[in-house]
Image 1 (cartoon, rainbow, N blue to C red):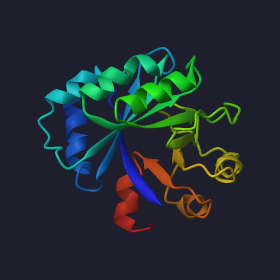
Image 2 (image 1 turned 180 degrees about the vertical axis):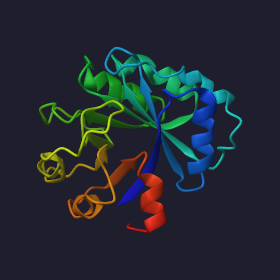
Image 3 (image 1 turned 30 degrees about the vertical axis):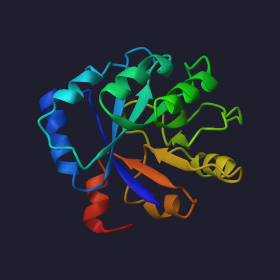
Length: 200
């Protein structure tokens, strides 16, 4: 199991860079959340600004979580900031096959994400590397972990998929999540707590 720290680019860019400096030594991967103000409000700052960061991130890999309408239209921006993996929410994605194919054609790992109340299905293109399940309603909130998350993880794990969880993870429920067989946990505000307490 891997734990990957996440960032919230809805704060101003200076705060974003401060966050990067805190987490870049804790994991080779860093997830950057991107919102467009349509699927999830408010919009994040322009993704292209990442290329102007003063943080030394040469040893890190970027994982871009696209909480946007038509993630396909964001692939070129992700390539521009040298992302290694992109994950698109399915709720406003018109063509999963086109999204996955375009991402792979650009040399990226690619995942599909399901919000906590989005019905699960097996319409998953063959080249999909990862399924991301939101542990609570997507966005930046403090809602608790969904009571259905264990069943949702099992749904995809039983089908042989690599599964990740984002949102709702706390030191109190970490052990429960760990026993679910989850492959990746994306953690924001609780990541440093987990590292400090060495609970993984």
